[in-house]
Image (cartoon, rainbow, N blue to C red; front, side):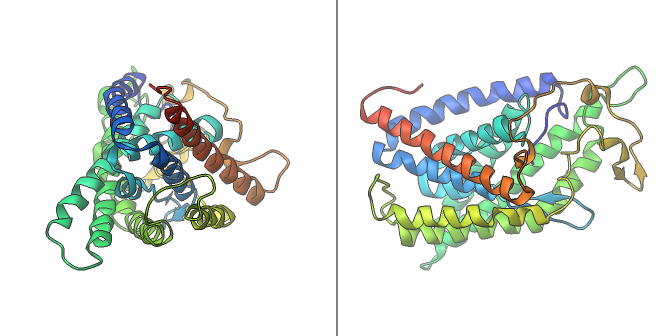
Length: 331
């Protein structure tokens, strides 16, 4: 679901990025007003779970892959506004350091995964909690919310892809950016997310939520607090297991490189050309592109990338917590 650069037109990216500005602003205000400084590091924990969850790629027949995001999980722990900021930071680190998701498309990816996903997931789960009974009602509600949230985000991404060939064409009538119409993009995105990837989001959300509720029921993470230790152990275990994501070969739908999109087969035929906007568009070289480190075995580079990414998001929110403690505003 990470949209690379040049799949969406610059104007589409600008619109979605602009739409995120008030969302980010409101989310920051809500966090400052509602979340105590002791719990701000929890946003970093949530961002780390999201970052790592997105590294566990799952294959589908036909060569495509996908992953969980964890937006509803963070919303269940901290609220949707906190989830928005947590997932935003995770996506920022992914795009800037690892080339996972575009720089120009950052606003679009945040719109889908940091806004639509956690807010839809949270609202659905809150409504369901009013009607579901039993001690597992909150987990069931969170699971259903997670499923609908990730599918809502996938639908938004599919629409963003699918409107490109309708709006942006060259003089020969070929698509300038994503070449697949809504009739292709929506079924393609829905196939994986209604089945395997949706199930992965549910399992990831419920499993981590249950763990967090048992390991750290107070949701307070202090530097030397005992409740934090099991959570960090879980993050460590996930980091060690991240190379399993390399077992999923192939490229996620809508994330092909310019060197391969001409050969992508849809409807029984290959596209046969590389859209001009993609071939001549914006280029950015990430430091650890594709979660790889020069000179290291692929699995080790992937694991090191997991360490770096998870550590950065945790440290970021610890810094924010310390700034709030010393009454320094973060805007």
